Image 1 (spheres, rainbow, N blue to C red):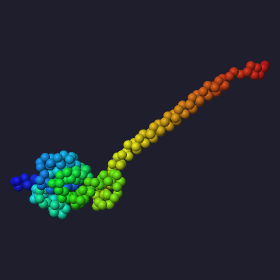
Image 2: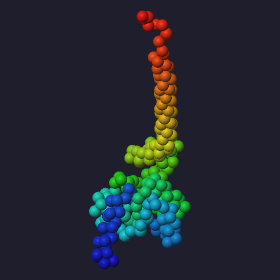
Image 3: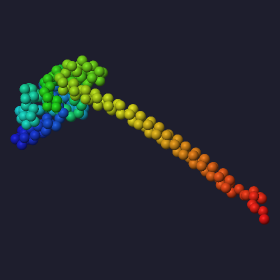
Image 4: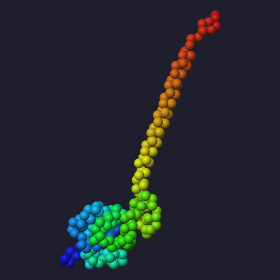
Length: 218
């Protein structure tokens, strides 16, 4: 690889480490091209699986400020799952594939700049399911930041579910207000009609002729 190509590759890797929500380093020794393609499909839009060169990656993680967290993991054939979508779904995809294909080894990673061990990544993959079921015990076994992340995602989904009933309540309130306004209009119309009926009666009384003989006789 020419020097210019190396510089471009390091620049691209550095940007990926900086822009991604997280990154998981793996060893893929022994996996076939078909298996790697299957892994990429299983990750979907949540993560991008990229085979990397350790020498260039070491420069990139240093430039990205992640050398302390990731440098010890760069040994052997390395590939990085850059997380661009749901971090929990990405972790679950890696965990499930590694179970079915033991040649994929999860070595560790970072989430929002914080180092994660392989066991923490595996726990994160199961934490979301547990949190949605209300199993607080799983949270207690996770680092604080992992629990906060899963809880924030749970709250976001719960809030989205409450939005529809809230809209329905607003619509009911609007209907009630409209009914009240119609009733008030009807009352006002009735009052106007009563006033109109009273006016002709008063006019008839004023127009009655004087009784004959009521004047002075000459």
